[in-house]
Image (tube, rainbow, N blue to C red; front, side, top):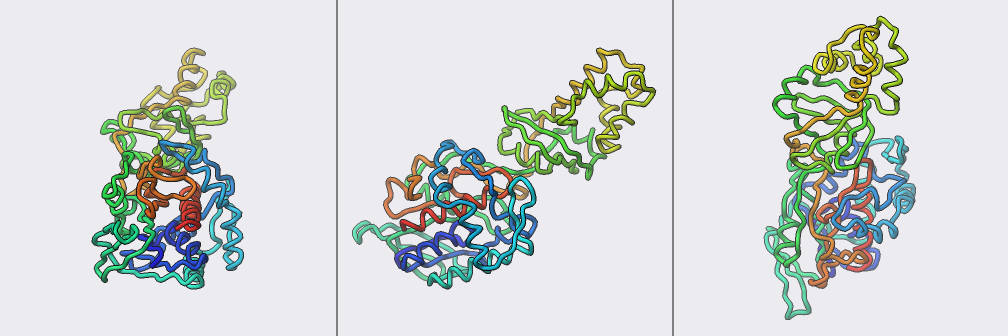
Length: 390
């Protein structure tokens, strides 16, 4: 073969398609029974396949500029043109997030057809056992699988990260990187629910299932969105976003009433006999308003609070501090933060600088997107980029 690609996910599929279009002989391996398993479950089964507003600022990496090249070469409009050609209908759910009108199977079928058209040989239920580099034969890669051995001039690692272990996620890509002497950045779960410390878990256990619109911040980053109480901690879009910036031992700060001047809101009702918890129930779930008052200030008629007390309450509502003890781990994480160090790769080609013919694309690389279609778009963009050179 000219090209062997390990991993039939988003990045591997698009790389295979692009290489096949260039008349390269491409073989795509995956240990799974079907292609595109993570695509299948993306966006609750409707596939949040890109975000129209994507820029390099939507990504975390030790080198924030690394992703610029790939993103500029394959844009959301490029992917939109592809799905339109196949008649896949989609819609914008807000903030530029594009989802399939139907199920994600439309995207997978499109990629399958594109692979067939490009002559890609897909081998499923096939596990890679060993990889050897034969430098005497022009630097060809020998890929030994449980279904035999193949060799190629280019080897693309598109194995993804450690999230969704039930779908077969593994550290295969990281082990290949280490085998060839490439540095790794630390990996951890990202876009993942946070776990309360024991004290807070006891305090808020009765709120499981309640949600509200809030703003959460950590280490100078802030995200607005729904926040959900779980039986172990906090989840929802705003929490998933901030989890990528949170590290163990850090606090998160939650604004319970974002977009409102809370002190002015309270002072405007200073003459009212309305109870504080009743007022807050107009903006927050009733159970949360009651529990918050029980914990932080004894609820009484607002006209019984002094101006200084109302000022303190306003501050507490805007700067509610929580210290999580951890995350729900890879089992609940949308993606893996960290991976193959981008300093080891060419941003123009995705090729390893010190191992000609070896490429890394997608989630296995230290480029992690925010919530909202950015991670799938990085998969498309990095796969497209490598596909032009393998």
